[in-house]
Length: 194
Image 1 (spheres, rainbow, N blue to C red):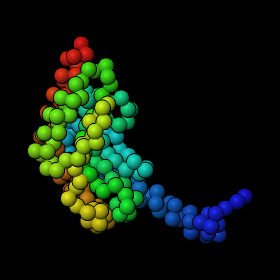
Image 2 (cartoon, rainbow, N blue to C red):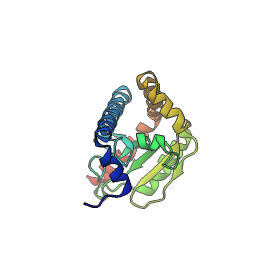
Image 3 (tube, helix red, strand yellow):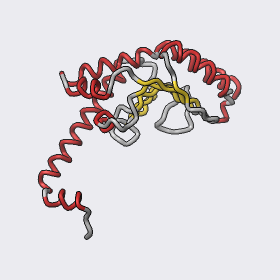
């Protein structure tokens, strides 16, 4: 068996490495539980969720079943990006962001250019500065969160993470005025598909 230096180091300290591994699993489980609390406390109508907080994607998506996406587990709707524990601990990762992602099936016949223009205009009104990734088959908009990684990590590790829950729930509540905008996008698509 050929081991690199890091693997050799861990093998020589296996009991400690196993305790660390169990501790990281417990931390990730607690973090996932906080996100369940955040999801349940904001916009119950956004009941189609994609929780990807403990993997490399580090994002949480919120949408409606009627906001169809071509990717199972990745709802069209609102996203918090760059919010994984690993992201919060490393400055070279994607900064925490609030975004809108819409990737409907072509069969819905949604005019993505018109939808993009409408969603972008309303997102700028609600979120302020909005960045856009120009893609033909989807709408991808985002705005960086005002809190730094360090502020979010501190909020996460103090008072059982309740300040973190408050901050993230506040960001999710801020997108409330955009819910009817996405409803209209998908309602128009559903009418065209009939």
